[in-house]
Image 1 (spheres, rainbow, N blue to C red):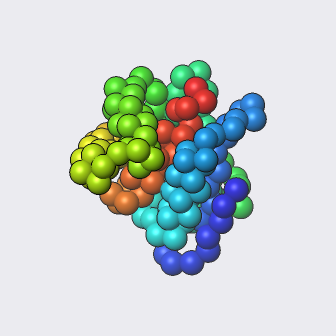
Image 2 (cartoon, rainbow, N blue to C red; image 1 turned 90 degrees about the vertical axis):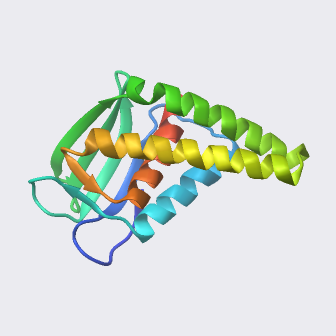
Length: 162
């Protein structure tokens, strides 16, 4: 579990991924996970709509083909569980993984132009996924674009094991 503790109360101060059975990610995926968690805790805007204010402890996991946002107060007491069907994200995640694979391959063996083109495609798909996440959670969770982007990265990490 990672932790942060400053700023206003409308934020995530702890985040944990429930990966179930032990999962080993590639070095690239593990790096993306660590960066997303670090960046998320460094700066985020996250609030339950119409509920108690934070700060929040967020636990992300997958249950029965659903992404679960288990939102708790900073002491760990449950506030709200929000399920989202993973099928909602299947297409964008599949395309994102495909482009990421090509991107990492291009970093090893491609030209600068290939890398730049794949990076643009990767960012575009990442933006699409984070906007979809923000839209689907909009009635329950208020968040900014950067928070949605980092949470989409973590959704992708969890999607690998599901």
